[in-house]
Length: 374
Ligand SMILES: Nc1ncnc2c1ncn2[C@@H]1O[C@H](COP(=O)(O)OP(=O)(O)O)[C@@H](O)[C@H]1O
Ligand SMILES: [Mg+2]
Image (cartoon, rainbow, N blue to C red; front, top):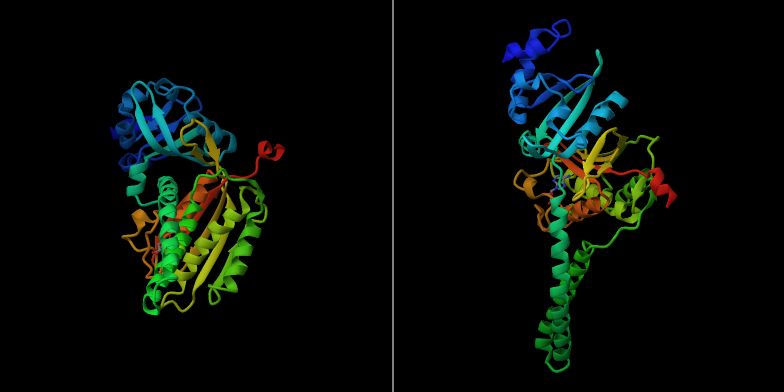
């Protein structure tokens, strides 16, 4: 097999060591030439595509995948931009191939015009590699739950509260304490349900939002309040286009992330709590729109980084689910709300955490010509 790899690879360009190395990699790697002919596939790619290198060597990508597959767009984009382009959650479907949830990275090869190197990953494999986690489903479960809660809890609750108020007028001072307790607790539940209702399905109203203003607003709020003793650093890309989103909701998102970062950074044995806010532009970051074949560009990213102890391992798999908290007085609703709002924006959130360095990274859509016309 490795002899095949060296046969496909022009030996003047890369030594046999490179081919052997690529072949040994557990991740499917494919090299296409300018006509999308398979120039190289490693062992993992043979398994992934379910075809031997020998038979792939006779074919082009369009022979094994319908030409309307989004993968071809990605490949075109790599050729046009001469930059690495990645796409998530692709479906590769044909008579002989059935793969969903595939992450693809395509890169140009500087020494071979129009050749494209593809790295393919099963989402589950990517997760096993513990690279980046994308959480989209959590938001949906929250939406459903919020609606049920609001509906099922509010009515009986106002009944309970009303009954307690009626009792208040006819009981003695000792029992009065109890009716007060019922009323106060009912109010507390009511406030919680109201907060949950923020998760309900409402179409968002979008405008063009300057993300740096949002970040600076949150930073000021934080520094005059809960993050008084935290040192902030900014690494902003001043050339960023505006985000296509809802300003107040984006403030909520950043505020929740900064609040968590501040709580983590100021833990007991950290003498220099730090938060870094980073923005930037990343070409080729696209995701599938759920339920459609459309792809959404998410070129703008915002990172909130702290130097706290990292996310507890047992929390990680459920991080964005509601009521998941490691704090004695935490609500566990912050990140659930973040996931919900980011999802409503068609965006993506990723986490990377280890002791001393935790990063939440948002990927957001920017204003396009189409939006600006509206
Ligand atoms: N920056 C962070 N560093 C470490 N752990 C974090 C960070 N952000 C979130 N977490 C973990 O995720 C949990 C859930 O966060 P969140 O949904 O905001 O709820 P809450 O802050 O009320 O606990 C937190 O309790 C904490 O364990
Ligand atoms: Mg929180």
